[in-house]
Image (tube, one colour):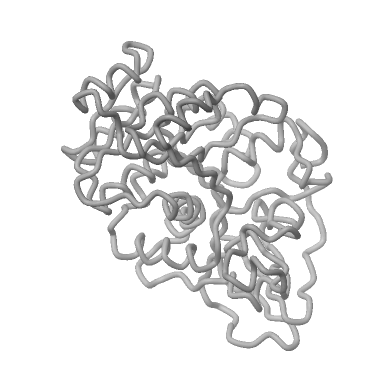
Length: 341
């Protein structure tokens, strides 16, 4: 990314491996919605020029002096959100809440390149995770977004037999759907306006109920299908403010709501009816990034086939074709786009 709204593919010097760090030869890097938003609108965490990309899998190409525990040739992913390692949050394992958080693809150059440097502090804090045998690089790259969903659901206490509503049927919403089913949700209502995405959601099992919110009021549908009670848990997996208020209307008393999808800068205020939170005693939770441990858990879930990553990979491009991948994301044509440098 040369500047806001300017992406170029060019030759740059190979990054140096710092003492304690490693170099990764990138084999797959998935495009995240945040990559597209950063390209189009900028980010307070990105100072161009910057190599974007944080959903990365590859092979260790070099290890720096003093690096221990890793060898050249190992297949790895990298959990991108790196804490300082010293603050109260980091000491308690909540590294994604570190006040000095730095992220690969934002403060550090990322994975839309042939080679990516991993800083020493990321290596030391366990952010480089080995890919389990049998999992492809393309599939392993999806561990990062899945880890973020695992983090988001850590607050929600989804229990056997409960009902869950997911607003948004992109790959994040579908990951949330699968995780809820793994936890024993009796029904998961998936809400979207794109028929193709709802068709994909419907393939996730008989306990998935799809709702096209262009054709029916989603709040009325959820209340009707739950005997007026509402869903025990609602996850907002889209960057739409009104969906947050709909979540409060459709959640049951003493239910939980996850505001998983962040809203664009300047458009994050004025949606929530706090009286709904107050009188229904609703728990409302945010979710940001994930930890290295959650990345390892995501890899395990994918390797065991509990969630089949390849069903979400709809487009693959070479690095020179990256803008084609960006446009596929913007048009809603893709679930997950993989760039293969």
